[in-house]
Length: 450
Image 1 (cartoon, rainbow, N blue to C red):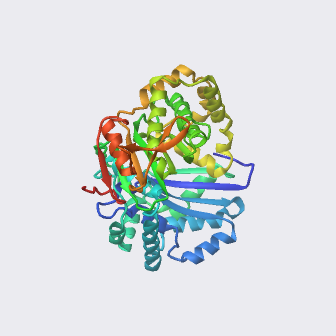
Image 2 (image 1 turned 180 degrees about the vertical axis):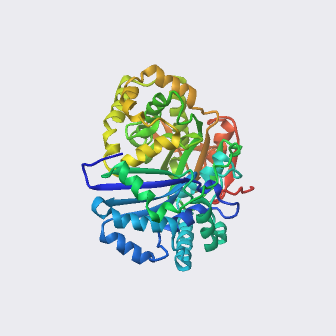
Image 3 (image 1 turned 90 degrees about the vertical axis):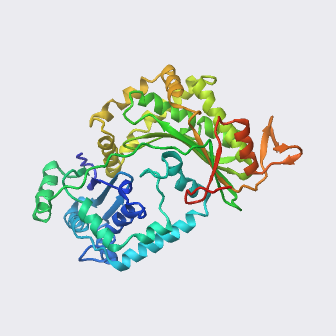
């Protein structure tokens, strides 16, 4: 995409691969090895590379997601020659130094320790096995043991296996022409680069955890992380635009039903959000928030109440909600192309999901065509309280409250105020969130037998 208004260029060379290919027992391999690639080249160590880039206000980064990975650069046009040379070195001859590798592993181990002290981080860690099952590539968790099993030789082998030009995709946005791009990639530094990386493996089907509520006990936690998830439509579904407006009404922004309930009305949370997260293969309906520990029980009640009210049509989308969310989507579109890197991301997403490259030219018209009936149909079709799994991370011994009219009171049974753990058992017994039991996990997603 040519953008000559500013003398800036962004490139991103993406490859199939990522964490879904991590061997069992070495979870984190793709993330560690791809992250290490931009920590120095064979000629320049980490500090020298950083200084060379700083001299020209350029950047080079490498990354790995679940099913894609790559190397990216950002540069002023006048410094593109020198930045591109460093980009090629990063791509073809990364340093993979033992001292940098040891530092990366140590930093990630420390990060894991910190993550296990945060309800929000723990919820994010265990969300994969809860939704996909522990044996699914998207359900495996990075642990201290899996990080310790990765070696520098693993990273060298990973680079040789997966970073091949065959099947790679290049995205370029900024102040240069297509001819300039072709000339750079046909130059001697890359002309001898050959080969094709392995294609994507066929993934097994997800096996969501067999429970209505999943609980991770974190003694002493000041807040609880509360949320739910279930599978929804794929990104290419024909009713995508109606579904997008529906999910925005439910939990997409500050004025969404979920946030107005839990933050503005109840005062339990600083912010609650929900919507559909898309990957290449799946759409996942999620909602989540951090809440006062004592309000965890009532938050779950309110979440399912909002879900059911929208799904059933008890509270159909209003004209005000429809106008607000459609206007937000349309008016917010230009900002999504405000920078070269942002524009690159928008077109990269089209290729990732298999959407046509002219997609954005018809976006506004398709948003504006969404009506209340389409949103109601999307809610009825895609919100599924019968399949939702509720994940709670918090202090199981916290006494909990329940909303009674306009105020809160202790949740009591037989004159005794229930703890969070007891309240979750009550939700299961009452089938308040639907039929299904309760499973307790630890911070690594391992089952705890009670």
